[in-house]
Length: 357
Image 1: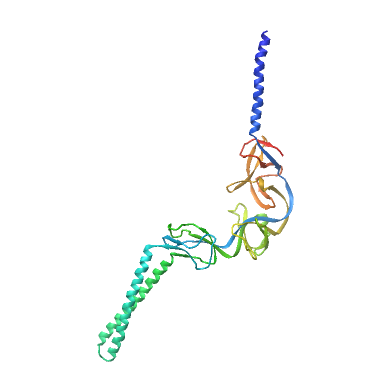
Image 2: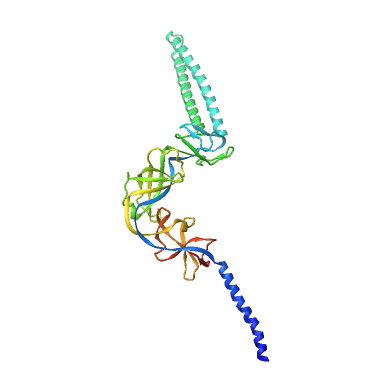
């Protein structure tokens, strides 16, 4: 009977332990992120090098002022087309306006004194020729005339300086273009050097992009490239106008400037474009991963790889050229490693993965 009692006592405990283990397994599985994965592979690829970049107007200027003043009037709106010399914004500076008024008053007074001295000189010249006034008197009038003339010239110079200062209160378009940004509002105080408006102009667009060291030697200034602008998918030609000579501060990439050729209507600054460098055409073993697998955090890009414990590990990568819907991996991932292609919920380092390919 004792044996039976012990068995009956232990049986419920074993049952409970068994149920607990199952519940723990269920809970653990429920926390795993469902993902689809792919194995990194290299393949020989013969293609034109592809890069990307954003369209930028051939001329872009941030307009500022040389003096302090309150924004009195803004004469344009974003998107307005303007001609060279158009007044875009007017500032108010009490001291400069007062100086201009004082200078104008000085000119008026000096001009009146000059004309009076001029008339006196003409009259005394006639009298002197008739011997009606002495040499001393005549010389005194001439001296007074020279003084009045000098004062008049100085007053006009002061007025020109005041007008030049006053001209700084008017912000004008430096060239034909479009107003693309405004950094200040009416009534705000403008400081010297502070950007007030942005204007874009010129006859076309440029694109700055980057290429890897394995490609940079294939190109030269003047080479023609093919450009596809998104989302319109419009295709046009461009020319290489600048080539970077150093990759020191650009993570191993070389900066390249492309100038678009031909009619760029109705393209807009900021549109994204794919650039096809037609000259490379190299064959090499290349590791590519789909763009949709890339994780971006600030300037860093990477993928989640599958660990031996079936958990996620974020791996930062150095990327190269884009090709179709994939991007070249220069370092950080090797062939044979498994990475996450798609996750059904939020990913983070160490999270358990439920792979369902």
